[in-house]
Image (cartoon, rainbow, N blue to C red):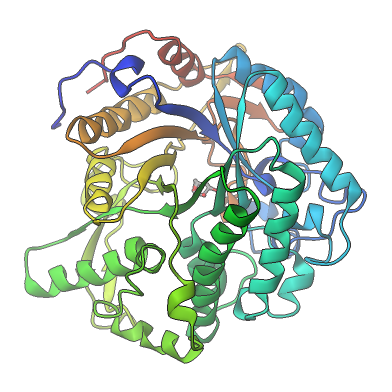
Length: 457
Ligand code: GAL
């Protein structure tokens, strides 16, 4: 594998590099019916038979709502300085707007205070997919009113937590929550079709920038980012058809939300079928889409290999599954391809006005086993080392990457896949809620303490 031959040691990334772990509210908190909380679209979706594998749901999840003091203690014991988590919108605003839940506010106040007491810096995502169900009943992301609802929610969060939270992320992976939730129907709220997808995209892109501006206006000194799912894209064959198909997939998966934020508009040149979005653009929207983010959150797991497919509606392209390519892959069927993160960091850094990049998620699900009170997960250790090596390679070549967060701190509810895929540095026994630090957790601790490692081949 191409590498930069630099030893994998924390100091090589520089003193001011941000190291952390990432989570999301619905995936860890549980307490789905805690006093004052409204239902989210994920409560409703996972409560509907047949939507999530084995009908799993996030009702209890990792019970982080009650166990956060112990979990933060564990995080501190692993020398992890930065903790990315999201706020649950319906825990704070049960109806999505209007009356505020005091219990919800008190919970996040306790959580943030506790982080700070332990010397852990909170990095807070405003929206990680758990829209209040009350808003979905009004059309959710397809209703342009979501802009007002989101602005109210963002302002509430900054007003109550901005005295202590200095790092914000507006949205988590808008391409995934609009694509999987409003086009494919495989994530909450389970809507399907182009007619839902296109307005959801436009409103999410507007909220991305408007959310940024809301934070900036109330907390000018805050560091503000937003996050994108992204994968290095390659054509299956070097034919013109596959290459053009790969370009369309790249525009859809990697560029659709980022380019409007950067002031470049939607990449409609390469995505002709998205032209219908213009129908939802009101006068002045062009100026509302950009925002000067302080950083862009890069969330990378794999690469995608693409082939032309005449029969696939709109995109006329298919992703070739890793299983069919004779390459290593994870429990999510995602190819293990460390160079993907290197290529995508380079690709993003080529935009002239790109701010700093922070890897806000990277990690892998492998079949872990708890044996004699231990979880030995060498594949995850190798995965993290190899991807980090590629981050360092990009950084050494001048890409302005300034942080890296592992997905995830603990095993958690993996959306439509339920609890089977485990991504944590810490194992969770869902019967007992017992936590066990995996070998990967110990490796990350030692790395963060400054010990050098050699990335496994
Ligand atoms: C991301 C998502 C996370 C987590 C991760 C692993 O797309 O933001 O919530 O599920 O993937 O699949």
